[in-house]
Image (cartoon, rainbow, N blue to C red; front, side):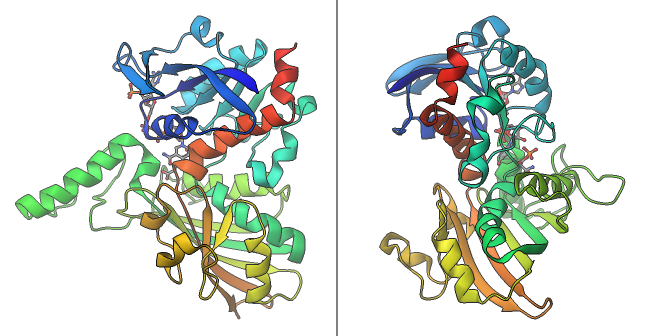
Length: 360
Ligand SMILES: NC(=O)C1=CN([C@@H]2O[C@H](COP(=O)(O)OP(=O)(O)OC[C@H]3O[C@@H](n4cnc5c(N)ncnc54)[C@H](OP(=O)(O)O)[C@@H]3O)[C@@H](O)[C@H]2O)C=CC1
Ligand SMILES: N[C@@H](CC(=O)OP(=O)(O)O)C(=O)O
């Protein structure tokens, strides 16, 4: 079994912490020989327990990161932009959870179940950088890929219901504090913070990140561009509306699709239920006994802590000739972020890509 020194940059954040949790599991392609953890100056020197060992958090530095075989970046895009090109030049595999390299033409944007074929030694030996998509894009393309192949995809309309953990650790504190303020002080005045322009407790906000010139938010434009890139369909019509809701973990997506060929709801269920990583929980399709309590549909709270992308409420719509609507939900910190990135490392270990990068 390949033994790797893995680095996590942003180890104290919600994605970094989830990555640490996932790395305690066994993977089929690699073992963690050594773990190196990085965070801001405020956290440097503190320790984090990993498999009964204490690991001291460091501030990022090139000399320390060069001891790693693979690094997972789970911090601001600016930090990824600063370190990743230098590390890649030295032949270190970098998986970036930020948006810094997602649109880069020579960086693969990968969801292993969907386009893991891009993680080849040929693609990664020159510039060993892989971008992991936005946390709404990942579950969306997981559901779209098998349907695109089988029925031909003509149009995608998606509205998201994004939990506050999508905006990081401080956003969880904001929702907690605003909710407490309401219950303790009966105060529901409109709050405002660096992360949310209006109060998020007991509210919903059609705004995730900044507004662009064309009226879309940054989040919406990422979902559109990343979906097209991953599905290799640069002209696919995609409309996205991103909404922040007062839940802690788990992003939901209401999706309406138009297909080129005739399709029924049961055909869609059939296709989705065979795709790795997808779990269809819809009406009578409660195949997994452990999930029976989910009933007819899955909510963000039920998806929290789970690896699957859940699909429910699959039904025909007559707004298009061959139209289908459905509901998707997944844990934004696991498949939407940390798990996807670790699956990239595992795929690169199983297919020999890491070995060929290390041999250079
Ligand atoms: N949350 C989500 O659902 C998803 C997030 N992402 C992306 O993942 C990345 C991380 O997000 P998230 O975990 O939510 O964010 P958090 O705010 O929870 O965590 C940020 C992390 O970055 C660290 N950090 C801040 N400044 C520095 C610095 N100068 N040097 C080193 N580390 C630093 C923080 O350390 P400290 O604790 O010391 O401040 C912390 O570990 C972002 O790019 C985000 O866009 C992608 C998909 C989903
Ligand atoms: N912006 C997402 C989280 C995410 O995926 O961000 P980014 O695309 O910047 O990595 C949210 O707040 O829910």
